[in-house]
Image (cartoon, rainbow, N blue to C red):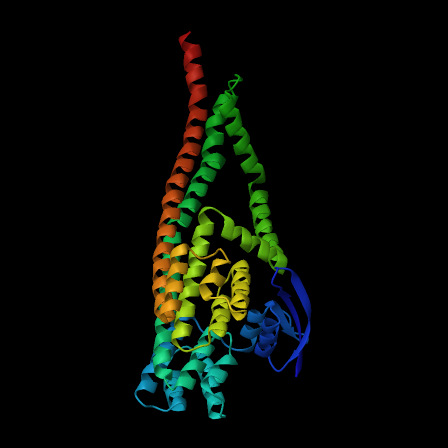
Length: 405
C-alpha cells in the first residue's frame, strides 16, 4: 500500500483535496471515482505533477500513429494463431523507434510473468489509456481479442484522422492572422513614420486620423517589445491560472457556452463520447464502466463533470437517454437515436450512427466557424490598411487645396 495525495472536483464542481491509500496510481484513481470525485491531481509520496505527467515520467509513451500500427499488427498476428507473447515480440522487432520498442517489451515481459494483457498494458498509462485497457480486458474475457484489437485500431485511426482534419482546417486562418498582424506592424513601424515625418515638418494642423496613426506608430515603436513581452507574460499567467482545478472548470464551462466556439466544442466532445461509448458497448464493457471511461477521454473538465453526473443518474436507474439529456450537452437528434437504440436493444449500432452524424455536424460547425472567421479577418485587415492609407492621403489633399487657393 502506498500513500497518495490528491486534488479532485466533486459533483458540484468544487475543489477537494486529501490523502488516500492504494496499491497503485490506477487503484487510487478508481477509489476517487467511486467517491464521485473527478481526479485532477494525484501524486505518490514526494512525486509532484499531474496524473498524466507522473505516468509519462515513469514509462515511455506512444503516439497515435504508433499505437494504431501496434494494435493492427498485434490483431493480425493473433488472428493468425500466433501466441500472445510471440506476437508481442514480433511487433517489438518490427518497430524502428526505441521508445515504442521499450514500451512493447515492457508489456511482453509482464505477460511472460503471468499477467493478462490488459493488466500489462494498464501499467503503462502513458501509452495505453483506460479506454484501451478496458477494451482489451473485454476482448480477453470474450476470447475475441483479435476482433477487439482490430476495432480498437480502426477507432484510434479515426481519432487521428479527425485531429488531422481539425489541425489542417486551422492552419490557413492561423497563418492568415499572423500575416495580417505582421503586415500591419511593418506598416506602422517602418512605412508610416517616414511618410508622416514629411507632414510634421510643414508645421500644419494634421487631420485627426493622421494624428491617431502617428500615435499608434509611436506607441508601437517605443513599446512594441514591451507589448510582446506583456502578451507572453499574460499567456504564461493564464496557463498558471488554469492549473487550479476551480479556475480550469470555470474556463471550460465558459468555452462550452460561447456562441461559435462553444458549438464546435460541444460537437467535438459529444462525438468523441458517442464513438467511445459505442466501441466499448460493442466490446461488452458494462454500461456504467463504459460511461465512466468515455467521459474520462474528454479534455473539457466541465464536460467530464456532466458525464460523471449522467453516470450517477444511470446508476440510480435512469435511462441513458434521460441521463444524457440532463447534461444539456447532446443535441436532440443524438438523444433520440440513443433512446431508439435502448428500446431496440441495438445501443452500440445507434451510438455509432449518432457518432457519425455528430462528426458530420462537427465538420459543418468548423466549416461555418472558418467561413465566418476568414472574411471577418480579411475585412478587418482591409479596414486597418484603408485607415492607414486615408490617414496618409488626407494631409496630401489638404496641402493640394491650400496650394490651389
